[in-house]
Image (tube, rainbow, N blue to C red; front, top):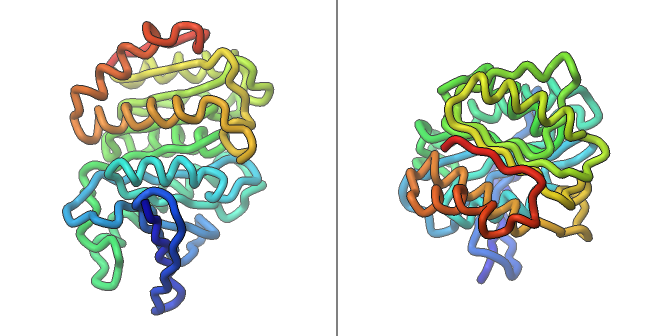
Length: 266
């Protein structure tokens, strides 16, 4: 299928095409909270869709998570992928990028000149991110509470003093048992706080999961599963999909060797 890229430069809309999923893309101006950002959305969308903000991690631009952005968009979402202002900064940079990005979702869908005008259901918004972007997801979710409807944190990095997160939206964490940066101990500490703050949560720790699998293009181990579980989580909470609930509840039974831990309350 054909992927069209829509790049907005000033008032000019430019087009380019290459073979991939039927997803369209356009860039948006930078703000004080992100240095670059782009929307990904289904090219044939004609009704309001759920929408999420998405970030990579430390030193990453949003392009490192573009594979996830395109997969989510191709499944019927609008995705705003962002690079924080200082990609070598503290976790708060990613938190603030998500907070500003959520405002951008609401504003952009009202703009007459926007390619996503009237394509975002502003009542069905979520947040997702990797590493510091995952930590930023949990911190932003702890501020926005029920204003967002789903969180997905991938190998979330938080300093010890930041791990007492308190999101109330349904929260997913995907992590790796062999991740040398985001340790199992830190994930367990974070998830204990998630369990205390939200009634709906999901954690999956991959037996061979490593940090680099998320952002290095030559390492694609587990990516199909990362996409499958993320989409199931978003579909269940943003689209009320019963089939998505089945995917989440049966994952461990179907692939027990893949995980060192799966726990959930849907």
